[in-house]
Amino acid sequence: MTHDVIILGAGAAGLFCAATAAARGRRVVVLDHAEKPGKKILISGGGRCNFTNLHTASDRYLSENPHFARSALSRFTPGDFIALVDAHGIAWHEKTLGQLFCDGSARQIVDMLMDQCAAAGAQVRCNSPIGAVRHADGLFHVSAGESAFAAPSLVIATGGPAIPKIGATGFAYDLARQFGLKVVQPRPALVPLTLPAEAALFRELSGIAAPVEASCGKARFPEAALFTHRGLSGPAILQVSSYWKRGEAVRIDFLPGRTGDWLLDAKRQRPRAGLRSVLGEALPERLATALADQLGLAAEMGNLPDKALRAAQARLHAWDFMPDGSEGFAKAEVTAGGISTAELSQRTMEARKVPGLFAIGEAVDVTGWLGGYNFQWAWASAYAAGMAA
Image (tube, rainbow, N blue to C red; front, side, top):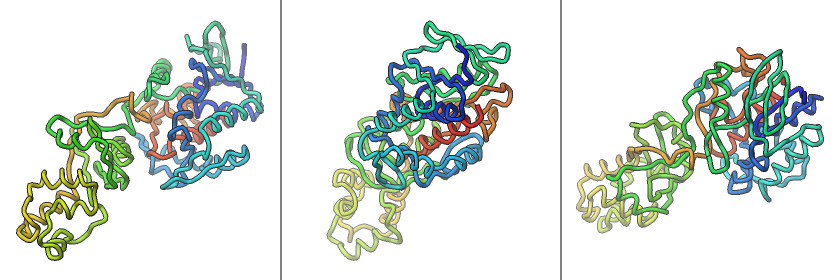
C-alpha cells in the first residue's frame, strides 16, 4: 500500500499535519496504536482544550536552540488557528493571560481535525500498533498491525512519554535514534514538584492556593501556587518546573504586590496586631499562620524590632524551597527535551541527515509554557512539515 506521506501519531500535530499535506494533494495515512484519535486533546484544558495562546512568541519556549521555533511559529500563528476554529463554528473564550478555550468541549477540536482530514482525503487508522520501520529504495516502510505501508516521506508525531496512562511512550526517540538522530534527554515538564520530609510543615497546607510569584533562575511566573500533600503545584509551579533542575531552589514571593517597608508600615499602623493577622489580610489564614510560625515572630508588631521585620519581609518575598524531585511523567503535562533541533530544518522540520524524515510537535526538543503554547507549537510545526512532506 503506497502513499506519499506516512504520519505516525494521531494526536494534535499528526492530525493537523495530515490535513495540511492532504490538502496539497498528497496521499496521506496516519497510523496510531490507540483506539481513538486525539486522546491528549480530549483531556486538555479540563476537557475544553486550551487550543492556543494569543501571546505566542518563540521566547516562551524551551529548547537547546531557543530560536528554532521562531520560523514555524511565524508562518502559522494563533490567528491562523483561530480562523480555522471560527470556520468550523466552534465557540471559544479567553480565560486569562491569552489562553483560549472551547466554550463547549475539546471533542470539537478533535472532530474539526478529523473533518479536515476527511475533506482532504487523508486516512486515519487507529488500532494500528507500529511494528518495524525501515528505509530502503527511497521509501520508508512501516508495518502496523497486519498491514504494511510505504512512502517517500515519514513524519514522527508520536509525542513524548508524558501521561503514560493515555498510551504516551518514548517511541519517537527510539525511532529517531534508529535513523541516527540525536535526542536531548527527555524529562517531565509542567509538572508538580515534590518536597522532602523536612518541609513537612507545608504539607499540612494541602489544598491551599495563593497568588504568588515563583521563580527559578531567571524564569519568573506571577500566578497561583498550590500546596499539595507531596509538595507544590498550581500554574506558577508548573511553569517553573520546566526550568527547574535537581539541586536548585524554587523561590516564592508570597506577596509580590507589596513594595517598600510594608511590615514596618503595618507596625506603625497596628502595633497591637500580630504578624499572623497582618499576613492574613493578604493570604489564606492557614498559610499566613504557617508562615508566621516559620518566621518565629510571635510578639505584637509594636514589640518587634525593625531589623527582625525587615528580615521577615525579605524572606516572605524570597522564600526558597528545595524540591527533591517531581511527580514525573505520570503527572507531567508535557515532555521537555526530545529529538534535537540541531538535526532538523527549522523551516520544514525535515531531518537534515535523512531526507524525507520529519519530526513535529512534542516529539521535538521544543517545550512551551503552560496555557496553549504547546498546542500552538503542534499546529505550527505540523503546518511546516505538512507543507513540505
